[in-house]
Length: 165
Image 1 (cartoon, one colour):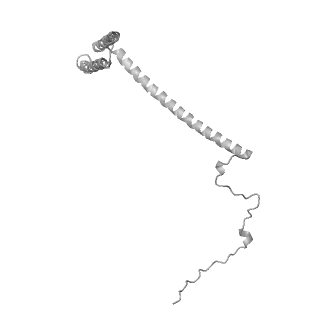
Image 2: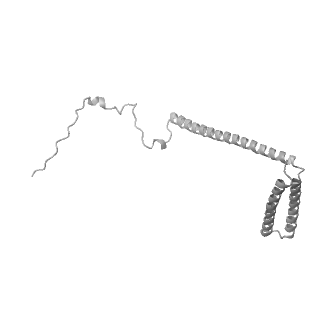
């Protein structure tokens, strides 16, 4: 049995002349670019100028971005500084109004005496050669415990006995 073949696919007849569809690749205005074009060394002044302009544009864009970031950080810092300054001024005014409150005076005296005693004790231990991390840690723990007791004691006194102005 002979093998049957499919009928040939009909083809379209070209409607334009062959010379109209061809591009003259030998003319000077048409050229091809190799795939490693970017890696080639610069051969013309135009290429050198283009590369120079691209570098300048990139540097200008990076400088603009850095300038904008610095300006934003400067504004943010100024705003934060003003907030902190206002808070400190408010706290200072509050402290100034309550400078004759016995709790405030007592805390100032207690912590002043504590600071002097700690400094003197650390100096003595250091001069005797006995100041080590164990002693420093023990003293720091005691100061922390005293601070907690002082905080809650002062809070109770300010709420119940000597309210702030």
